[in-house]
Amino acid sequence: MIGKKLTVKNLAGLHLRPAGELCNLALKFDSKITIKFRNKEFNAKSVLSVLSACVQQDDEIEVICAGSDEVEALEEIVRFLENKSQ
Figure 1 (cartoon, one colour):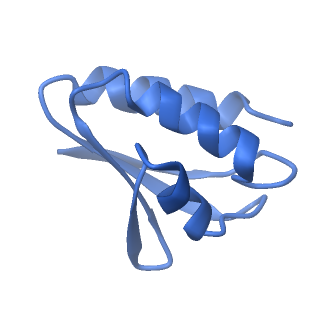
Figure 2 (cartoon, rainbow, N blue to C red; figure 1 turned 90 degrees about the vertical axis):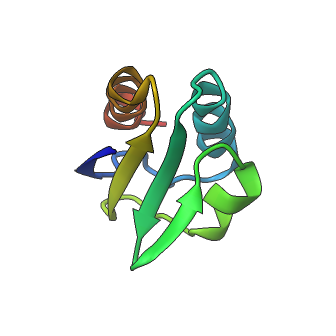
Figure 3 (cartoon, rainbow, N blue to C red; figure 1 turned 120 degrees about the vertical axis):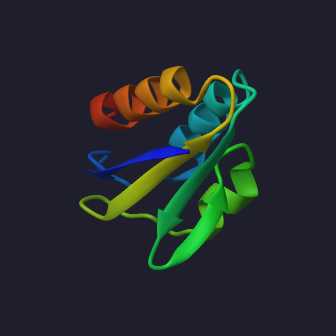
């Protein structure tokens, strides 16, 4: 299991469009991918779970990946979140 903390750059946080894109990306990996925010964990492979986190711009989250492709999954998810600005 590995993880990384980062600040959400998206101007509207993880609203419907970026949440959907994040989930589609997460579904490409076998690893369990979790977003930890405010001491709660949310399944990154579920749009409803990600939306229920109510993550806004400049919120700090932690992405946690566990599984056979966890390193690649973490790199791709973090790259997506750090580069997403709309």
